[in-house]
Image (cartoon, rainbow, N blue to C red; front, side, top):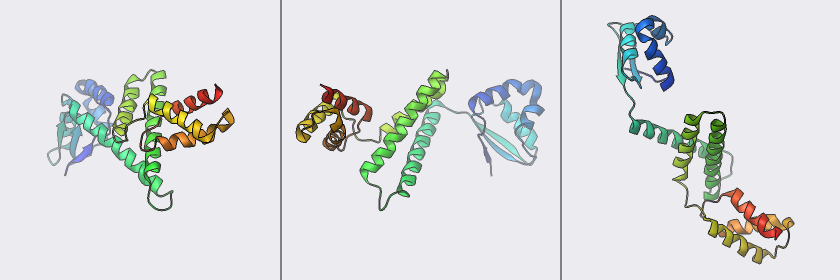
Length: 205
């Protein structure tokens, strides 16, 4: 049986591979390998570190390297995002009485999307464009499983109809207008901030 050794991220793999020719004992020693161990090195690159691990494992062990491909990485990323969404939905199920309704499920998924986009902004501000793009890709993956998003025209029409229905005349009526507008957009993914801004603008005029 091969043990799955993918604890190193790509940057660490590159660093260890660069050390490999001169510091094989040091780099492999840092992995805590034991003689006789069988290793599956996922993301092995050119395989220098895999060969060093095979020598460390000895005759009774072994090491096999598999290089990442772009499609493989994207599929792994997709599955990771879906597992995250499934975990969040199951957690929410434990917090409600009865089964999880569609509206509740949409709220959970939209929260995950917002968290990913907020994280992307923070990573980008910190100069970590690679991590920012990863967060944005995860948000896009989750977004694909949501209903179609309400357009700007859809939201503007819903706000106008909600104002007429409720007879709202001032910003203090914002809560009832938001509720009525959301009811008209049921079944669509709603950008809460955009809808809120539309209601504020409409009631302020």
